[in-house]
Image (cartoon, rainbow, N blue to C red):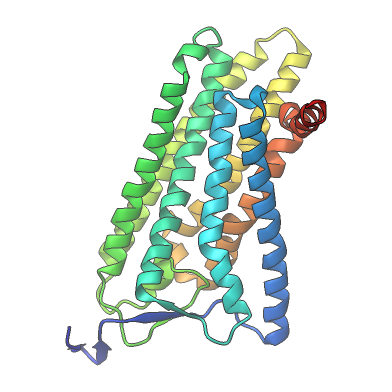
Length: 316
């Protein structure tokens, strides 16, 4: 494709981008790289442990832990799509990513993050069925239904990612190829576009807003019924156990949806790149690191699983 002109800006097919990442001198970069490395290792270790423990412990082969294992898988995947490259860039003077690499990173990141949003809503629905309709639960949430729900989450995430990727990377980009971020994401990429990005911003806010509002309504409705059901219980111990279990999920949901809303579902998000970087670190690294802790520390079955596996290994 030959270069062409748009006003005073040269527009040409870019072969690569430069991820500017975080500012600061060598000391700041070294501090950030050490911090990100520690958080990423904790993230990988925590989520891998959850996947292995749930897979090996027969007591955890139920719908709630099936979805929890998939949550750990998604957390592990989308942080791994971003942070090996981000860590390399922090320790390197060249922060180049090819155009194809940028498209690939964004596609998989968008797929995983959207899938997790749908999954959190499915997990709320699962708790609703388990607590409000316990007699129908084994049939309503049989393995086939769980697999179909999980597949629907992945399909929804992939569809959103295809739309966002095609809309974003079909834009003509100006001669500057510096992305003011540490990952390929829509808001900083729109800053480089030479064309009018109104439609792209509308698509971003509409789709993300619809997903966030829709899944949030499912979560709130499910937990509204759950709260009413729990309050009707006579046993104080039963109420405490259920509130504790549901509280873990509500904590994860609040952190995840809250940060996504700040980043994508309100117009001011595109204007503040520095805020966007901090928020991005929170939902792409901190939350995936915290999720295994949130779900294990308040869940006796998960906490006891490593001990049961050690005993089983010793017995054999």
